[in-house]
Image 1 (tube, rainbow, N blue to C red):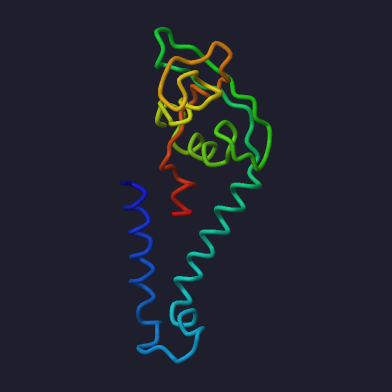
Image 2 (cartoon, one colour; image 1 turned 90 degrees about the horizontal axis):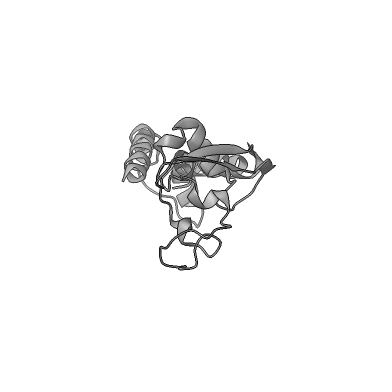
Length: 151
């Protein structure tokens, strides 16, 4: 819901401030939609470029977190040290959210805990494998800051 509210607010602001810049009638032709709504197209293109550049060029260092969902809190370290990774452990979306919101404010039971690498019960929930990677227990915010830019 936060993502919808944020995107709605941004689109409403663009519409509010660019209404007077738009022509009252469209000229005939296939490209008239682009010229009439040039500011909206520009806003969408800038958001797309910011998202893509950040996703593929941001360096994600190694990081650690404490898992409070087990009987005893335990610290785990996720080995990253890379750029442009799209997997659950080392993507730029998670990194931006960890830097802005902090690890303790992210959703602690993300959907990837049900993947084959994490549990034998996949695709259902179940106990973690003994040799499950540390990222299986890592928090992640599905409606985070960077992923809201692409919305």
